[in-house]
Length: 192
Length: 265
Image 1 (tube, chains in turn purple, green):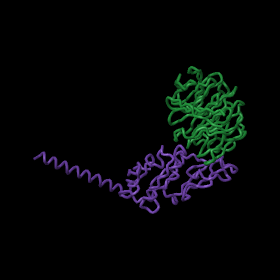
Image 2 (cartoon, helix red, strand yellow):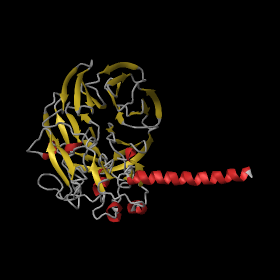
Image 3 (cartoon, helix red, strand yellow):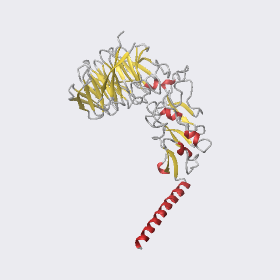
Image 4 (tube, rainbow over the protein chains, first blue to last red):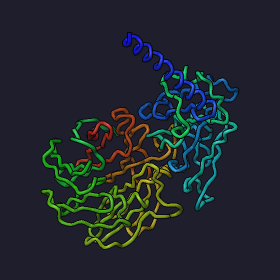
């Protein structure tokens, strides 16, 4: 008899614990404390070792928000500030009179650049450049991310979910579509 | 002009810099050691460095110089430590070393400059620093250069897609090279060439995709020595050329040294 009660108590306790855990999760999620984020080490656009393949644009096409909540973000401390940035230029386009590729890479023209520091107006190859991503234009297609990663670039550009754009779906459509399982839910403190 | 791939030497661990001496022996820096390979590519000796070695070079007297973080260690041919030049500012991260009769040159990647010292280790002058504007641009993290028989310094300036020629006092004489993502005569990507060797001609290596080329001194492309043989993720592939114009190139990912020789017409 007492054994039966113990089993029943245990089962009830387990169910309550699961429900309580779920409730805490939902409360934290509702309060914006649990968020979706892209794991750069899993995303094929930024993951080291995957070179010579087309950029994956599922973050652009699968997000339920009209202009995806995913954006390319350039971490300036890692950026090489190169004259010929493969994330900015289509480096296989014809070379123009300035000695630079004649085409840009971004299909939405979302990356701007300007020379910084000591500037040589005569020869653009002598300068450092700052690359700024316009997040109102970027739709997270990942092309620049793929071209920025090592060894072609320095891996300073990665895809990130902008919380002010994300509607925090319970089952994120990008996460469901991502073949790399690169999106996961994290407490705010652990997310980028 | 053509080259053929003739040998693969197992690097026996990480490989950063390589050098060939007058006898055709191959020295390799990597991990925290110097490795010596005979002309057949067999490992014959290895000895430790006190810090991870980024570069190695052999002087005319047989002394072996190892470039490290904050210092250069100088060994005799048997691996016995003779001297240590320590200077955290001038030798921040030594990724290349070269010589003339009276001078020792060290590429300091931490400060994007080539340092010139006398044979006793006294600093004399910088080369390539802020010359003409912003100096050596090295997003790849390595300063590499070579010294020709006349004492001119040929520095890879990958951010400018050039090879620059300097006097030993630091005067920029001229440069060869240009960006081009299609024409193999140009240097592609964000920053190439990364590494350089000079003997009868100028030899360069590039990353993404890895490529080895030879130019004459006017900048005319003479040969694409190799492209497909290297792991695609290789970068900063050190290169050396021996007295018979055999070309040694590091595959940094496979930790091997690939050897090429010119095909005689």
